[in-house]
Amino acid sequence: MNPIRATLIGLACALPALCLAQWQWIDKDGRKVFSDQSPPADVPAKNIIRQPSGGKSRPAEPVEAAAPAATVKPAASAPKVSGKDKELQDKKKLADAADAEKKKAQEEEHAKMRADNCERAKGSKASFDSGVRITRTNAKGEREILDDAQRAAETRRLEKIIASDCKPAQ
Image 1 (cartoon, one colour):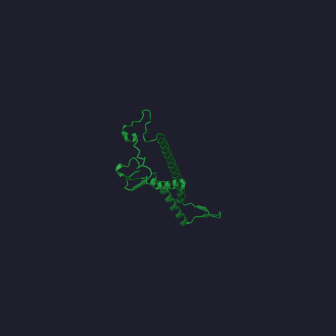
Image 2 (image 1 turned 180 degrees about the horizontal axis):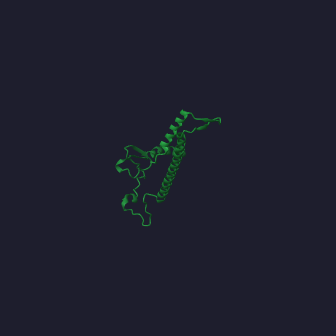
Image 3 (image 1 turned 90 degrees about the vertical axis):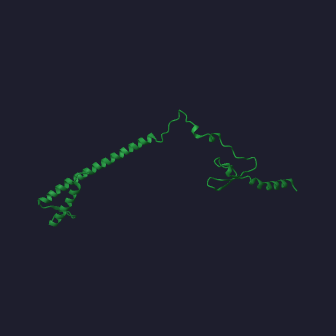
């Protein structure tokens, strides 16, 4: 038999033995885990079912992880973190102030429009109540004189406008 062929056959037979070098453990959820790497440090030794017998062993926990977190003190020159960003708070205050200003301006504009509508409706109603003839221009551009039914309908419409726009703002 050829020495190269014998070596290849020997390696082929040794390959399954290398594949057996796997870790097996039970994770925190109770599931079996198979891996070619050692389990995480948080897996207790009692949960490790199988480990390779070769040179690999579970790495020791780092010294920093073994020390309690309370013993680590922040450097005196490190900035204190308050959990809130002052710049972000300032921007929020400015945005809130701008929104309030915008809302106030809209309310003032709405109040001016209501006051204007109130004055116009009162003036028109006074004209209708005076009894003079009221004329309108129709779609053809011709003048029409309103009859009693049209005057009454227009008077009711003006009274609704006065009732809604002439009351004080709430």
